[in-house]
Length: 160
Image 1: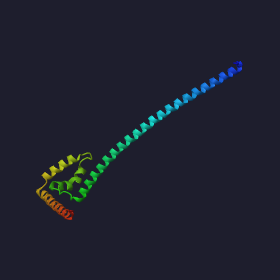
Image 2: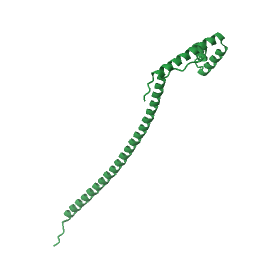
Image 3: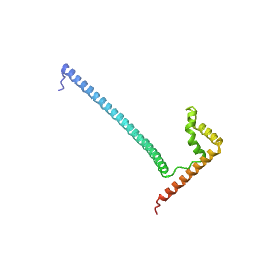
Image 4: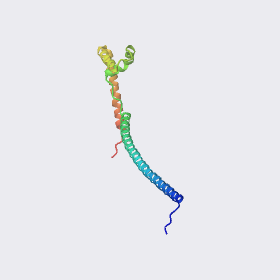
């Protein structure tokens, strides 16, 4: 009942089995590689998403800080636009009149602090008529300031 196959057929059947087994192993390896690639892609994707979220948060914080800074700058500008300049005293009037001339006499690297100190000494040693003239200019500037301040206060509308 049981017949033996000829050796060529046995060899052919063995080769087919080996080929099928090799093909099956290759398919298993490819399936594992695809699974590994998918896992790697998922890990990369998760890392990219996390980095994008981190950058969004950092960017939002930076934008918030910039917005706050701009708001403060706008407040400051608005305040300066609506407030009159403070009045100068006699020394400041003297400094303003003489600073250009003094800058010509001293080298370009001379600090503002040093120039102010020199101007202060010059004012203290100036003749009394120059000091009186600067005091009158200071009084005129003070009157200008008070007038601008009154005008500004009269132009403000208070809402109930």
